[in-house]
Length: 148
Image (cartoon, rainbow, N blue to C red; front, side, top):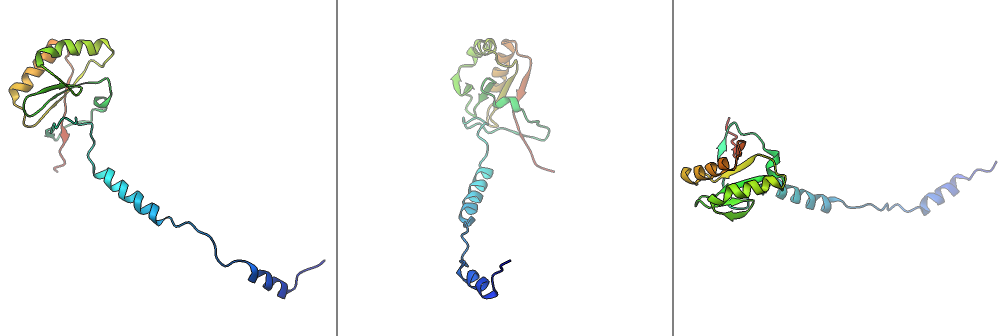
């Protein structure tokens, strides 16, 4: 049986490259962390896009179905304008529009987002119109307050 000598093994070891190719992942990790922080600090946009500032409440619960495309979401802005799914509507038109949405298969629940600066009179008119449409299940949207 033949075995290489120590000198042949040393020559072979010297011929092998001492440089090992590696990938530098630090730039990728840096960009990833920056994007992660940006997306974590950006508030979610399902609150409206209408400039509605929701009130704070200690006992609010998440309404996951409110962000569905077919959810009946009504917003009242601080200046009293009313929106049904991002479309400006007059409050007297709401019952017919809600009934049409129900015929299209929407849930029998209305999600009302009222701006903190909206007058109670404007919100009350919208609630009355929702009741006229035959909706008894109304969720008033609010942000959870984090005070201890």
